[in-house]
Amino acid sequence: MKILSQIIPFVFSTVKEYRIDESHAVGHAFDVLHHAHVNWKSSLESYPHLEDQQNVIYTSALVHDLCDAKYVDPHKGLAKIQYYLAGQTELSPVEIGAVSSIITTMSYSKVRKKGFPTLGTYQYAYHIVREADLLAAYSPDRSILYNMYCVDPHWKQACKNAHNLMRNRVWKHGQDKLFLTPYGKTLYKEYEAESRRRMDVWLQILQDSTMTTGTSGMDLHKTGYLYSSVDTGGTGGGGTVDV
Ligand SMILES: [Fe+2]
Image 1 (tube, rainbow, N blue to C red):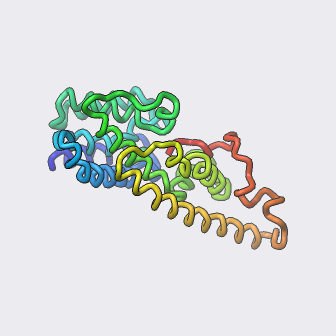
Image 2: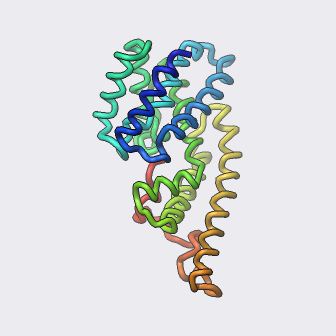
Image 3: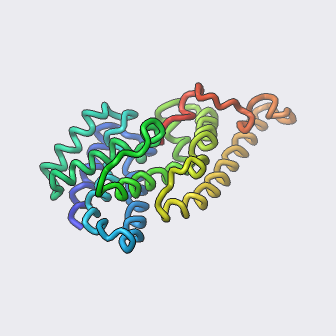
């Protein structure tokens, strides 16, 4: 597959140039590519037109965070992506347009604000890439890392922000009807269960660490240190940040 050899080096160099932290760097791009590939493959029988959209799906999955406002001016980021795709890849102008449309409308916040775009023949490809990114959001560790790199370097606050993000957003993806494909609809439940288990362990680590630093015996709910009791009004910085 030629497109991957054309895109992956671009992702590496751009991540380095924008100093994108590990929460949104190449590992995340690979994670999204992985989900997008499996979903694409399992959707081919029902949606045979996707056969010709593999390059658009792979490219969108890999470059989607290279125009993210958290790391770069989105217009500049998009212009750089389009310039590269036009000059260094086999993608046609129509395919570059499709990639551009997908990556500029797929984020959680844009969907919540404006709903799903109408992308014609690329509609299902859009959902495949968007859902792949949503599935990557179930990791509390990744959210903690993002918070520590970009919001608050203190790990305890980062845990609190990650917990807020999970409760206020990620664990509501299902009820918010954000998964439309059979792949996403099936997998998110498993991911949510694992995410809850992992967040619980982080909360235990946090509680144990608090107790060994002098608050042993206190009711941690009353102190506000047990985060299931924390108000999640969205002013804590990072608690509602896109991942
Ligand atoms: Fe992403």
